[in-house]
Image 1: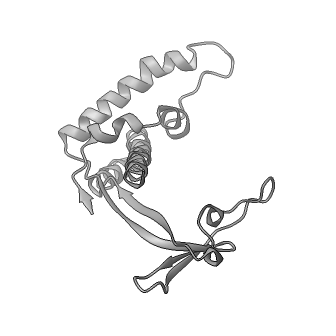
Image 2: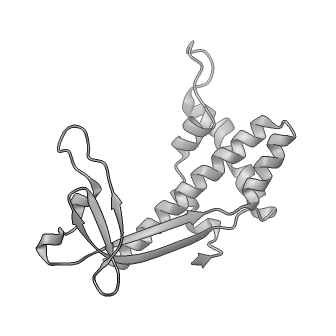
Length: 175
């Protein structure tokens, strides 16, 4: 487990489009009147984002952590089989196939069991901690719905940013 990951390490991985459009619902008026989406981002989105990021730092609301590991594996059909130290089955994940196109499945990207070769899968779990969840619950209970939605949306996107940041690190470690 890696704890205490600083916001500055993964903040650049934050997907502003997903935050502003998806989480915060920032959109240009349908009538075409008023500011454009880009203007809203500059006048509302980014200033609110900067304020919330400052608050997260000041109030110490983030507890970013990652648990990750590398596991020997093989694939068989739609299954990814994680192996124990003796080469026996530790656990198995079954993945769905795409319904059209090439009909791929995640297991297709790992060496098949019949090849006789072992592959490696990296697995990770990330969190931005419980303090931010406690704060969003407090805002919700206080009927501060806009503040709740903005902070909750930001926490979701920060967890995504942390996952992307760590995924890049895993890819680097694996070469």
